[in-house]
Length: 294
Image (tube, rainbow, N blue to C red):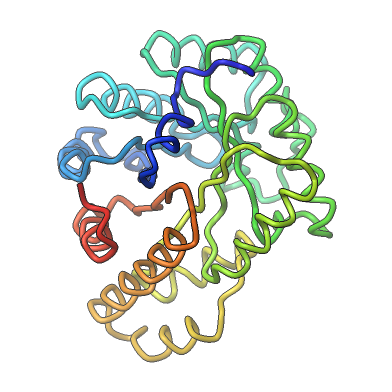
């Protein structure tokens, strides 16, 4: 069995849920220091690891590495840097991998990535690596990194059939993935069905559910339109009821996410990856609600 630096399997073997957060770098016109106070608050919540996202088209790649490095080397929390194919030559990817390694980072979430915001018709075939599995294979050659990849419980938005998307996922895993993190979803039954499907095609690595709390109704409608996640009737009713009041919507969203997480843990999920939207206060409330604050 391949050895990895990030001891995900040991977290699972401890029989406690692996709690991780996703955060994003500040916009390029905002000082990077603006996120440091947020990191201090997240540190108090004692996550097992924190992942740092990558701007569309690789726009925040340097900030991703700098923030992930600070999390690992100054706050003492395991971190995971996102890395995408979009807009990068092989030489640029190698330079980023070198920077990640020199920053004492061991974990990478390898993604195809989103096109630049101003290029909706971006040609992915012009990348050095067109698909995530190609990037994963290249990273694996460097050895030493633990590689995570994305899983889409309802299929990738650009995939015509879920069956095909599952085969692409199997291809990614077989290329060298150590664990998977799912795209957001709002109906746990879809996740459980997805686990059955992945198991049936021989995917055996850990699959961590990604949960995004709903803070604003219009925001979640925009995000789901981009990623293809469905909105169950219960959630539609909730957004209709509270959507015009930001505070009520936030409270209802926190309770909805808490209910999702409680059900996932009760049904054997190894952990949860919280898409925090850089909101430590709301993240704390969710952890308290679910009994996961350590």
